[in-house]
Image (cartoon, rainbow, N blue to C red; front, side):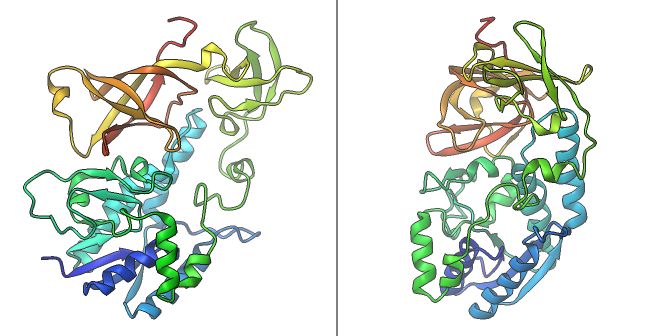
Length: 373
């Protein structure tokens, strides 16, 4: 059924092996390089141009056509604009989730289908679906389900938790059932060792090698304010802007012997409230309020009552059992079975059950801390 597959080629080993596996199975493979960022600063931090050259190198080696697709304007409006707006409001966003939702599995998916004649797209994400890595079970009458990757450390379903079921139905994840070491081994065995040895990009793509503080000052005006000890109400220092701090982060404040941690940002006063101690009770909560859920597979239990599942708001953290209730107006209340530290507004509550990722919702605020429970 599927003949032409367009691969999102990034210049890295994961998409390289993805393209190779599809080519070796006889698909009509086309490569597409997404250009999402268009700034090369004076220190040359942006790796986009080198990635584009590496993508060309791969496709020449595999004998597949490649085109560059420009989503710079869309990325700025849908991802980076929201990113800046959130930071200015004292919220900590997740641009990777937004990029997958708005760019890779929306605009790119539509471009591949409508402009490149794709029957399906493929990416190098470490994730799986119930339709199989090459959509072998596409005609299965069941709804498409997003399943965690075999490699627990590399699993990327957290970042895919807001994509549409429509796009997922026609997406192949050829390496989702492999460990990273296996992917690199394949690359070396088939003559793609350059990609296996290429250093993996980490962190927010558009920040590059700079510190986040050095990057963000080019886009957001610095608005200094006071650090205030929440317990005593005393001013204990000065901060250099909301955008430099996130909930739970340690704050080294001059002249203060005890370590402080960010607890709360107050927009009206421009104060940042801090507490003493990494595990201060104010930083712990077992309740979360979230809004605007995107369901890949909407749980039937939500229609009538409480849905038991698992929760995480950071992709590297263990899953926590929880109960989820719809409260109306596109809002959710999540009661965790155990308290977590530094649940952060602007991040995402991502929901799992067994090995399936059902979707996610943006966190509005944590519930009352342990102090008030």
